[in-house]
Length: 397
Length: 194
View 1: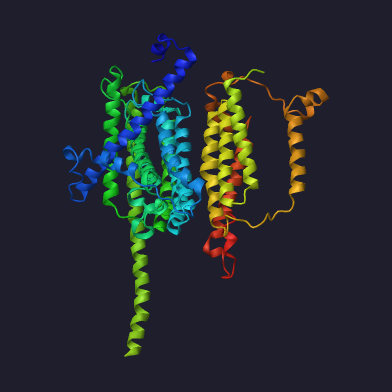
View 2 (view 1 turned 120 degrees about the vertical axis):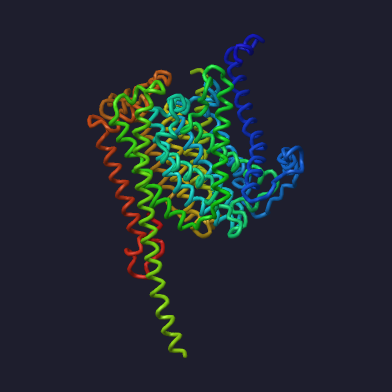
C-alpha cells in the first residue's frame, strides 16, 4: 500500500499517513458494517431460542432488515429534553461507540493484518474498555432522569466490580504467552488455551458478559424496573450509537475470547494463505457469540445484591486461586518459555487441563455444600417464622 | 528549537491537561469538575505515551480514569445539589494561589538546569538523564516487572504500598460492616469516606 502511494508521487511520510488513515477507515467501516449483519444474526438466533421466526420480511431471510432499521433510525427526529446537561449528554453516545471501536485497533485479524501490534496490547484493551463505563455514567447522569441515574449507579457498582475478575483472568493468557501483545498471544497458541485453562475462559466470559451489561447481567437497562436505564432519554441516532456500541462490545468480547483462548486466526494453512486466517477468526468469534446469545436468552436477570455477592465472594476468589494454580504449575514445568510446536505444547496443556479438572470438581463440590447450607438456613428461618404465626392464629380463635 | 510533530502533540496535550485541570477547580458544577478531572488525567496518559512509556499510559487510564475518577463521580452523584453551587465555599484562594506558585517555582528549579547554574545540582537536582524516546528499550515492561520484585531495587516500596492498600481495604470493609455499626444513630456517611 505504502509502496503504491509512493509510486504515484507521495513522499514517504505522507504515504504512510494516507495508508494508516485508510487502514483506520477500513477497520472502522468493517466494524460498523458487521454490526448490521451481526444484529440480524443475533435477532434470528434469539428468535429461535424463543420459538419465534425473527426478522423475515425485508430481503431474503430478512437479511436487509438491519439496513431498513438503520435508515429509519438515521432519519428519526433527534428529540432532546430541555433539562439535560448538554455536553455530557451529547458526548456520551460518541464515547460509548468510540470505546469499542478503539479496541479494534489492536486486533490481529490474520497473521499479517493488524492495526497496531502494541507491546502492551492486553493492557490497552482493559484501558479502552474502562472508558465505556464513563460513557454510561455520563449518559445516566446528564439525562436528568431518575431511571437513568439509578442505571448509572448500577453501572458503577457492576462494571467496576466485574473488571476485577476479568483483568485477573486476562493475566493467564498473558502469562502463558509471556507477552502483552495480542498478536504474540495468538502466535504462541500451538494448542488453543481453551484446552489448557478452561476455568479462565469461563471466568473471562462471565465477567465479560457482566461488563457488557448483557445476558443475565442486564441490570443497567432492566426494562421492568428502570424502563431503559441510562439511554432512556436518547432518541434517533444517539440511541442508535448506544445500540451499536452495546452490540459491538458484545461481539468484541467474542472476538477477544477467540483471539486469547481459541487461537485467533490460527488454523490449517492460515500462515500461508493470509485471508484464510480472517475466516477462521470470524468463525470462532461467531461461535463464541452464539454461546453468549444462548446464555443471554436462557437465564433470567439476577438481582443487584446477588450480582455483587456472586462477584466479590465467588468470582474474585476463584479467579485468584485459578491464577495462583496456573502460575505455580507453569513455573514448575520445564522449558515453558520454549514452546514452538504442537508437540512442545502437548505436555504443559495436559498438566494444566488436569489441574483445571480438579479445580472444576472442587468448585462443584463447594457449590453443592453452599447450596445445602443455604437450604438448611432458609428452612430453619421458615420454621421460626411459621411457629409464631400459628401461635397468634390459635390465640385469635 | 524546531517544531517537530512531538512538540505539537506536547503543546496540545499541555493545553488539554492544564486547561481541564484549571476547569476542575473553577467550574461550579461538581459533576463537570469530575469529568474535567478525567480529561486532565487522560492528558497525563498522553504524556506517558509521548515519553515512550505506553505501559504507564495504560495504567494511568485503567487506574485513574477507569477506577478512581469513576468512584469520585459516584461520590459526587451522591452529593445533593451538585450542579449549581450558589457561591464558592472555599475562601482561601489567595493562600492556595501563593502555595501553588511556590510549589511551581520549587519544581521549576529542581527539574530545569537552573540548579546547575546555581551549583547545587548534586543536592537538589533531580539528575534526570535525557534519553531520546527511540532509545528506550522495547522490553521496558519486563524490566519494570523485575525492578518491582528485585530486593536490590524497588521491592520494599512496592510491598509497603501493597500493605498500605491492604490496610485501606480492610479498614473500608470494617467501616461498612454491619457489626461495626452498633448504635443505630451512627451517621450514614461513616462508610462513604472509605
